[in-house]
Image 1 (tube, one colour):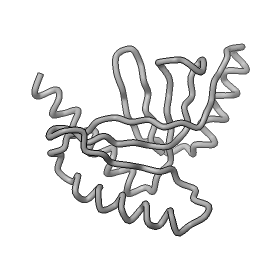
Image 2: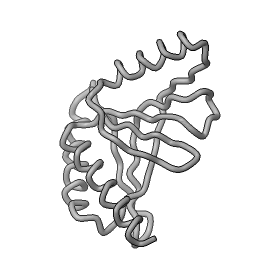
Image 3: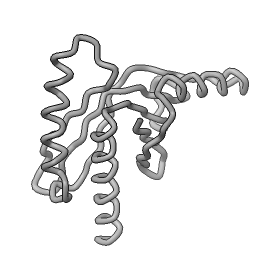
Length: 138
Protein backbone atom coordinates (compact mmCIF):
# COMPACT_ATOMS: atom_id res chain seq x y z
CA UNK A 1 0.00 0.00 0.00
CA UNK A 2 1.13 3.57 -0.65
CA UNK A 3 0.69 6.21 2.04
CA UNK A 4 0.90 9.88 1.14
CA UNK A 5 1.15 12.22 4.11
CA UNK A 6 0.27 15.84 3.41
CA UNK A 7 1.62 18.40 5.93
CA UNK A 8 2.28 22.12 5.94
CA UNK A 9 5.83 21.26 4.89
CA UNK A 10 4.89 19.21 1.83
CA UNK A 11 4.19 15.66 0.75
CA UNK A 12 5.83 12.47 1.94
CA UNK A 13 5.26 9.16 0.15
CA UNK A 14 6.02 5.77 1.63
CA UNK A 15 5.19 2.12 1.08
CA UNK A 16 3.63 0.28 4.00
CA UNK A 17 2.83 -3.38 4.44
CA UNK A 18 -0.35 -2.85 6.46
CA UNK A 19 -3.57 -3.37 4.52
CA UNK A 20 -5.74 -0.35 3.75
CA UNK A 21 -8.57 -1.74 5.88
CA UNK A 22 -6.29 -2.35 8.87
CA UNK A 23 -4.72 1.10 8.68
CA UNK A 24 -8.12 2.84 8.50
CA UNK A 25 -9.46 0.72 11.37
CA UNK A 26 -6.42 1.56 13.51
CA UNK A 27 -6.88 5.29 12.84
CA UNK A 28 -10.58 5.12 13.74
CA UNK A 29 -9.85 3.30 17.02
CA UNK A 30 -7.07 5.79 17.85
CA UNK A 31 -9.38 8.76 17.20
CA UNK A 32 -12.12 7.21 19.33
CA UNK A 33 -9.75 6.58 22.22
CA UNK A 34 -8.35 10.11 22.03
CA UNK A 35 -11.78 11.68 21.64
CA UNK A 36 -10.79 13.29 18.34
CA UNK A 37 -12.84 13.75 15.22
CA UNK A 38 -11.83 11.85 12.12
CA UNK A 39 -12.96 12.22 8.54
CA UNK A 40 -12.55 9.25 6.19
CA UNK A 41 -13.70 9.33 2.58
CA UNK A 42 -13.05 7.80 -0.80
CA UNK A 43 -11.04 10.34 -2.75
CA UNK A 44 -8.37 11.06 -5.35
CA UNK A 45 -4.86 12.39 -4.86
CA UNK A 46 -2.15 13.47 -7.27
CA UNK A 47 1.52 14.32 -7.15
CA UNK A 48 4.25 15.11 -9.68
CA UNK A 49 7.23 13.04 -10.77
CA UNK A 50 9.96 13.96 -13.20
CA UNK A 51 9.09 13.35 -16.85
CA UNK A 52 12.73 12.28 -17.29
CA UNK A 53 12.81 9.76 -14.45
CA UNK A 54 14.41 6.47 -15.44
CA UNK A 55 11.78 3.76 -15.54
CA UNK A 56 8.85 6.06 -16.37
CA UNK A 57 8.25 4.23 -19.67
CA UNK A 58 8.08 0.95 -17.74
CA UNK A 59 5.52 2.42 -15.35
CA UNK A 60 3.46 3.69 -18.31
CA UNK A 61 3.37 0.15 -19.75
CA UNK A 62 2.41 -1.25 -16.35
CA UNK A 63 -0.39 1.30 -15.98
CA UNK A 64 -1.79 0.33 -19.41
CA UNK A 65 -1.74 -3.38 -18.57
CA UNK A 66 -2.97 -2.72 -15.00
CA UNK A 67 -5.88 -0.65 -16.38
CA UNK A 68 -6.74 -3.32 -18.93
CA UNK A 69 -6.80 -6.04 -16.29
CA UNK A 70 -8.98 -3.88 -14.02
CA UNK A 71 -11.52 -3.20 -16.76
CA UNK A 72 -11.84 -6.95 -17.35
CA UNK A 73 -12.59 -7.54 -13.66
CA UNK A 74 -15.94 -6.29 -12.36
CA UNK A 75 -14.70 -6.26 -8.76
CA UNK A 76 -11.16 -5.02 -8.36
CA UNK A 77 -9.41 -5.06 -5.01
CA UNK A 78 -6.97 -2.40 -6.18
CA UNK A 79 -7.28 1.32 -6.77
CA UNK A 80 -6.91 3.11 -10.08
CA UNK A 81 -3.76 4.88 -11.20
CA UNK A 82 -3.47 7.45 -13.98
CA UNK A 83 -0.52 9.24 -15.55
CA UNK A 84 -0.88 12.61 -17.29
CA UNK A 85 1.83 14.71 -18.91
CA UNK A 86 1.80 18.16 -17.28
CA UNK A 87 4.62 19.79 -19.26
CA UNK A 88 8.11 18.93 -20.53
CA UNK A 89 9.37 18.46 -16.98
CA UNK A 90 6.62 16.68 -15.03
CA UNK A 91 4.08 13.87 -15.15
CA UNK A 92 1.12 13.84 -12.77
CA UNK A 93 0.43 10.57 -10.99
CA UNK A 94 -3.26 10.34 -10.03
CA UNK A 95 -4.51 7.80 -7.52
CA UNK A 96 -7.90 6.64 -6.23
CA UNK A 97 -7.94 5.77 -2.56
CA UNK A 98 -8.93 6.92 0.91
CA UNK A 99 -8.40 10.38 2.49
CA UNK A 100 -8.05 10.43 6.28
CA UNK A 101 -8.01 13.78 8.08
CA UNK A 102 -9.35 15.72 11.05
CA UNK A 103 -12.16 17.25 8.98
CA UNK A 104 -13.67 17.20 5.49
CA UNK A 105 -11.92 20.44 4.50
CA UNK A 106 -8.50 19.73 6.08
CA UNK A 107 -5.38 20.51 4.06
CA UNK A 108 -3.26 18.14 6.11
CA UNK A 109 -3.90 14.45 6.37
CA UNK A 110 -3.12 11.04 5.01
CA UNK A 111 -4.07 9.47 1.71
CA UNK A 112 -3.76 5.69 1.32
CA UNK A 113 -4.18 3.49 -1.71
CA UNK A 114 -3.59 -0.13 -2.61
CA UNK A 115 -2.14 -0.97 -6.01
CA UNK A 116 -0.60 -4.08 -7.50
CA UNK A 117 2.71 -4.57 -5.68
CA UNK A 118 4.98 -4.04 -8.72
CA UNK A 119 3.11 -0.86 -9.65
CA UNK A 120 3.45 0.46 -6.10
CA UNK A 121 7.17 -0.28 -6.18
CA UNK A 122 7.68 1.63 -9.44
CA UNK A 123 5.59 4.61 -8.31
CA UNK A 124 7.56 4.79 -5.08
CA UNK A 125 10.94 4.47 -6.83
CA UNK A 126 10.08 7.17 -9.37
CA UNK A 127 8.90 9.50 -6.60
CA UNK A 128 12.20 8.96 -4.76
CA UNK A 129 14.20 9.75 -7.92
CA UNK A 130 12.21 12.96 -8.38
CA UNK A 131 12.82 13.95 -4.73
CA UNK A 132 16.56 13.30 -5.10
CA UNK A 133 16.61 15.46 -8.27
CA UNK A 134 14.79 18.27 -6.45
CA UNK A 135 17.38 18.23 -3.64
CA UNK A 136 20.28 18.25 -6.12
CA UNK A 137 18.79 21.13 -8.11
CA UNK A 138 18.20 23.35 -5.06
